[in-house]
Picture 1: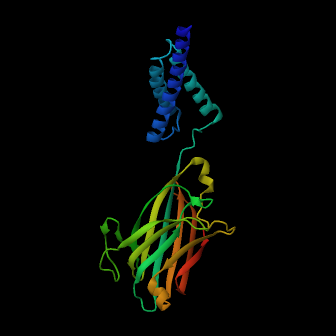
Picture 2 (picture 1 turned 180 degrees about the horizontal axis):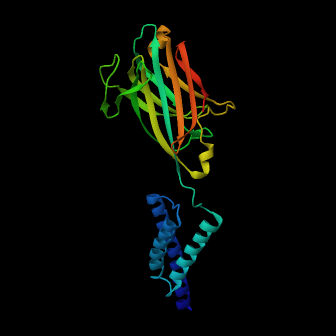
Picture 3 (picture 1 turned 90 degrees about the vertical axis):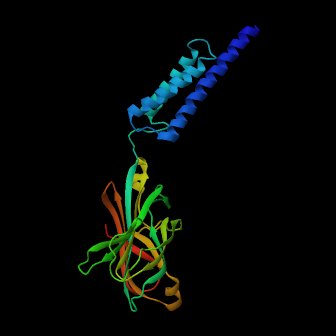
Length: 278
């Protein structure tokens, strides 16, 4: 009697070990590689999990029982994933969204640089949350007389200084923020001279099932508006007014899907609504 109980107990422990190892291997592969979006990678992950869990289970269960348990779990998962889309769905690969946000300081009455400039650009969002992890950087341009943009500098160094600039742009801080009108990308730079363009650019990956919800629109507003912000302490202290432009674009797989922009003359610091043009 004791021998039968012991054998049955070993079988139960062996089956539980098989299932546990199977789940652990899948979670480890998912953490390392991400969940598969093709049948080939799905088969590879299930095959690896089946082999390792089967080998572990066979050490405790009667011959063939560990293999049976691992096989049943692998088949059940395959049928669930492929047939019913539960708990994962194949074919919905992440989609890349690129963004480009810029602030142009055209001129002011004294044409002095904007010192210690704070900028906030709208970020790609889904219902007031960041659409995904953000990867990005910055570039500094100069607007020529014919309207062309000349690259002056980027994160790697100086390229071709123009206008009044004689040194590299200094970045004090950069980051992300959330607000009632949606997430924002933030920058604090040392100086921006007239006719200079500060550009924030980057990309994010969005789950395939959510791509149609990505937008730059200000959250909670029915009209197609977005929001951007500029500020300097000097502007606040001296009521400094400037001519400036904001423009923000978002691309889905290299196709422009939204563009928001605004141009103001003789205006002071603060939040500005950008109207949709694309």
